[in-house]
Length: 336
Image (cartoon, rainbow, N blue to C red; front, top):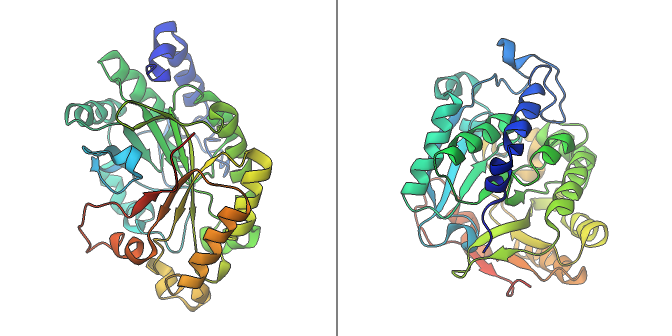
């Protein structure tokens, strides 16, 4: 199995050049499609309330990812604070939308690099940066610093897909596994539930770029652990709010029916979706019928690679008071 791409970039000096180009985007921030233009290097916060230093709420071996990421020793997840979306049903809203509290979790990028090395020492199979979009330059610099000190694990970019194509191009070879959500097929849903006006347009452009870099073939090691590729997560929302059928059809037609899909049943109402009448369409878990419709859409579009969650365990597993380590995912079939 080949080594992670960032090590090759590091050897040639290209990784350091990429980091410099990414940091330049912070000067008038265009790191994500919000393009707020604030000078984060001069201490001005972006529209996501993030400055120059990364904010990390926690870092830990994580066992709730897809089996080829969690393995037996866990994915080495680094959970960034703040977010460039404002999802009204965010399961981690205390991390993503409580900006005053998250300010206390601000760290130097050198400390972020140390965290990845600590996760490697603990035996994690990969380094999973969770919600990394608004800290992509800092993430890349941490990878550079950690590579100098012996980091050799694959890098997983676990994103909401509201990403800048320019940034993704600079991350080509830095990221080994793209793990994007594909949240909505409809612009109105993205505006109402995540507070951005153009989610489908931006997410589709991001997925096209990720596919250009990785294609549809996943690379595994001898233990069945994912080393490189693109795995698209699609969360089924109640009342058809996500437009799952349309999103799956677009993936099959615009990318490839061989793209790996992780179809997720874990939704349950939380945060503003559970209390605000404006979001009544999201105030319940999905039904068995809605799940069956999503599965049928997978089959209709010939999307047979990836994972499916089990409906009867998924929403239970993702509740904060549920501590079972057994993943609710199951393989659809062996990846090709």
